[in-house]
Length: 211
Image (cartoon, rainbow, N blue to C red; front, side, top):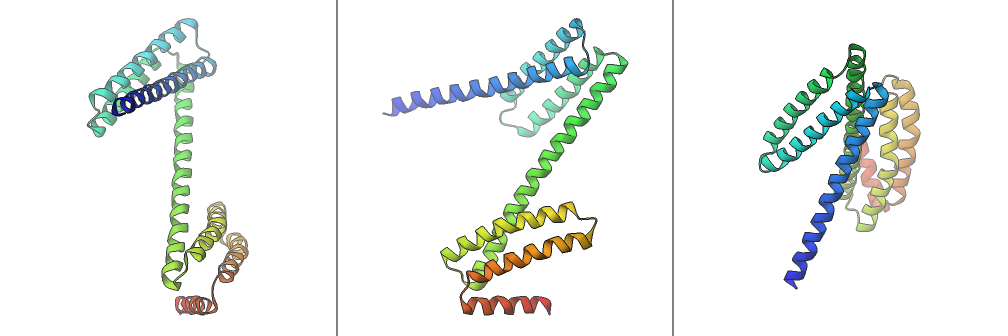
């Protein structure tokens, strides 16, 4: 059985590595085609840049093996590789193409930062929902069923409130006018899942916060 399990594990890892390799290859081909279209590459330029990107891919793969136990060293090596690859690509381009290449790089960087920001916002939203749920559960002694319902309510409303705050952060009046109705609905739903004693405790907590 152990031998059979090892065989399945080897097959699984092999398939996974092929998948990663295919994805990286596809990404490189897409990048090359984008350069061909956006930069209006000649055949000679296309062939030269194709070789540059292929060499960079091979070096990056070698770095993964060489620095497998040192993530920081791998990141530094790949950073140096990116800089060298950029320099080689730029050497193949005329001045107009160089300007467009730099623009493409900036657009890609901006897109990456936007996606990263969205990921951070999502993580912060999930964290806020969990914090609010934990706080209510601890302070009011919610049952497991009440906790699940409270989390569902916070999950419905807090992301909407967060999105409005981000959209109207420079217009406080509009932001408040849009947030207040949502917060009122959310609080009403929270109150609907509580016992009379818990409602009284929650009102008391809110009053203390005002004071």
